[in-house]
Length: 214
Image (cartoon, rainbow, N blue to C red; front, top):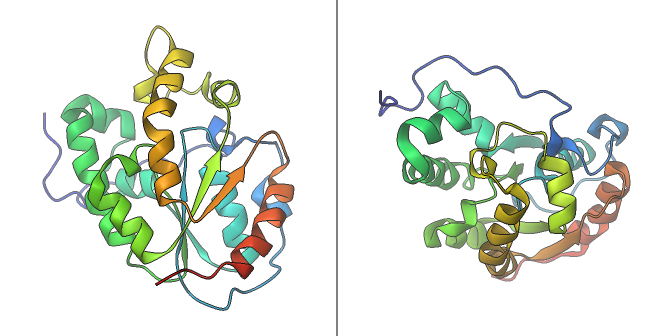
């Protein structure tokens, strides 16, 4: 079985549940953050970091606070392909998934005024990193391996963690990816266990003060 070359063909998948582990540095939903400011530019904001770092939940909170559209790259891929990410991995392997991810990222990073949550492995490709660095402001959401494991240990929608030792897999992935996250990052945020509203409010002034170097 192969996925259609026309990735847009096919029905939209069911939406991810609001209580999935990606949504959890804390139980506070993004709705608890009221719109507070507008940035003096329409540069897109890209969130990078490991699976479980909180990119989706924090991204939604930032989008609400800034009055911007939120886009999740994995959800974008699922909508285009009509199947969930684990199914893409199963049918096409990681190589096929990364190819589709790169195509979606190249398209989405050209959209102005959005908040884009990328996949944990999106930084692996040189072209992806170049697009992220050149086209917007990149936030690296950093968390410890123990915290990442706590947030993802019950999530069955992460094919790379379908191993006998998911904590060890997270540790290995962190060693490989951490330098790449740091390479593309304009701003680094330690997520820890702070509530989402607190994290979002701490990020807003950093975004307002940051000036992207040309």
